[in-house]
Image (cartoon, rainbow, N blue to C red; front, side, top):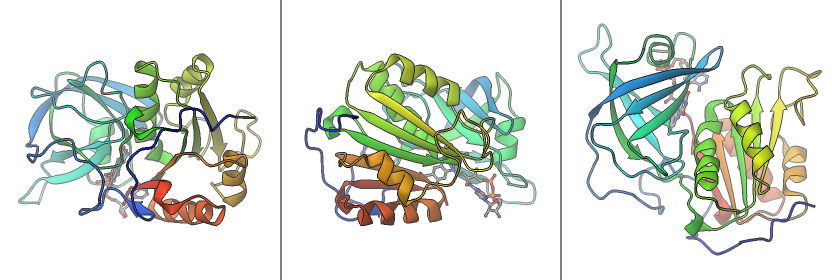
Length: 272
Ligand SMILES: Cc1cc2nc3c(=O)[nH]c(=O)nc-3n(C[C@H](O)[C@H](O)[C@H](O)COP(=O)(O)OP(=O)(O)OC[C@H]3O[C@@H](n4cnc5c(N)ncnc54)[C@H](O)[C@@H]3O)c2cc1C
């Protein structure tokens, strides 16, 4: 049986099941001053899936960030007087080098910003970013074990958490449940499989919602109560991190509470 009981040191408790990207929450901030816009240099665009890339940026003014945080990106848009901005989570670990950040970006067809970031950039280009931002964060000071549940691009900040733990040689148990349409669209699938192979504290469970015959997935449906009960395995992690579309995050949080998880142990980020 997976041992959730290891390393369960206490972290800061957040009251209620809450969206940690919402202003006024009781989570942590990394910076006291408001970060300003800076021109990130694209040093690599790495294909992840047919519709998603990792945008690797070098920041002229690097700022410490915490695993799970995001950056805002702004672009000029035809017919608009002001640039449009969107948020993208960091998939890389802040340790050992926070001056280069990886943003995991999936193209939303007909979207204003994501298609231009996924298809329109190459090495040497510059893109305005501001950050870090967000209170959906984890470090070893928070303790574990962790259950991480991500749907679609919601897996991105969870990958940062896992990579940070690996880069820091931590051994806090983590179980990561990733829900994707199919094998080809599963973000960071290969990196996560490699990490799970080499890190005994990490288990990665894939679910492919639209490919019932693909045996490389442990499940073939959207995240549901039964899947969460199996992931909990009769025990309660110190923290649960949920990230993805709002409806998925809300339903998952409610099922977990129904299964006996303390609402104060659930941290959420909704990709509105
Ligand atoms: C805190 C935070 C972190 C985020 N991190 C990431 C990340 O790491 N990677 C990532 O790819 N995205 C992330 N997002 C979502 C991202 O900010 C944009 O919303 C997304 O890229 C769509 O922007 P767009 O300009 O291309 O589409 P828009 O022009 O804003 O939207 C076009 C149409 O698509 C719909 N739409 C918007 N988003 C989605 C969606 N996710 N799924 C289906 N339909 C949608 C809209 O309702 C609209 O009808 C994050 C959002 C938040 C709030």
